[in-house]
Length: 198
Image (cartoon, rainbow, N blue to C red; front, top):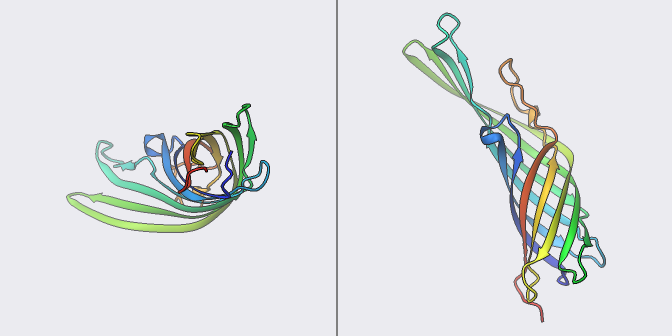
């Protein structure tokens, strides 16, 4: 499908996890693909993940209608991945391909807690940052197709399973029970070149 040896790409997607606001967190990606002969098209990719956990509120023991503490947790990750990216044609004209992308991920992860304590009429604000590293394997499955015959450009629609382990930086309490392993999600990736086919 892609005679040009190197293609750049941009992508966006959402990981699904009910522990987060809006039931998930977002990711933006960029990288390059190198087209070997045959069905192997290895890629190097960088992704930025960001999202917020559902707010954690603690109520006063004496008067349960009053809040005693709020914790707002934001999570971020910079993730580098490599994949062999296997592409197999699924139509006679070689316009559509099945893409199978097993990935090795290395992610630098960060959690930022904004804490608000309510002590009568007094409000105390503080912030705590925790950092860590997550190494994992993931998998993308999707369909990639050419946008028009005169160009090398194409678009990939995929579903994926990620194992970016934010649990390493989330402060666990009785009220916070987060599991970020093996999240499912969906993603759209656009592959582009700066020249047309001859």
